[in-house]
Image 1: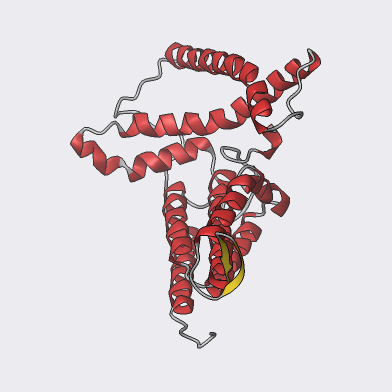
Image 2: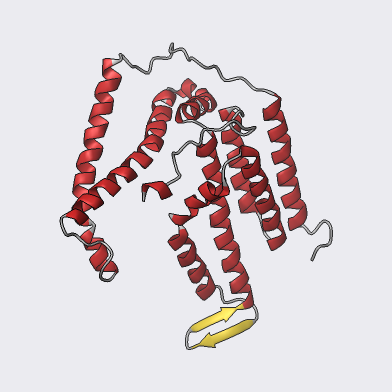
Length: 271
């Protein structure tokens, strides 16, 4: 299970995307998400998909590793597609039975929503794959620094988010260990209906919570032993600086938004 969890994992490799400033990457991910929500046609989805594939190639991350992020949400994607298929009843009717009506527009709408979820997850996964948790913390703290004027604990929030990202793969690995220990004692997690499987997971949750609290306590003690504090006068080993790569990436994302808007408005008469 832990091998299928990509959120919070960093893929160490030398690439154009890895060398981008974390502040720029955070802002560009927001632009990417906005672009996905602006999509209004299948042609625009092709633009987003092509841009995503190009980004993966530039980041030099194997497609197999990126696609692992889909495994955790495949049920949500299918469930969302089915709901949209059943409740979107506008347009030409393709098939009907009793209260179930499937229309052509409903099929297209469910496909679009499924694609939107997949593109969102695949795109945001690249952020953690190409950025270390410490860089993410520094980037978030820098972007949120104006909130210090209203006494907002920017550094505390940034470090909490960074620790949370680091804990995700750790906790998933702990779940694997607990489940293997339970199976060695005769427990079964794959038999029975959905409710029986959910009930079988209860013995896993209690030791998982105990382990999580223990790790959190050990982390707090380690920070305290190293005299860590969130004072505003803290220095950094690596200072964030913008480079020509950040300018190139910003221009590329600007072109990405322009293309989506142009395709949505059928600027080239594609449909």
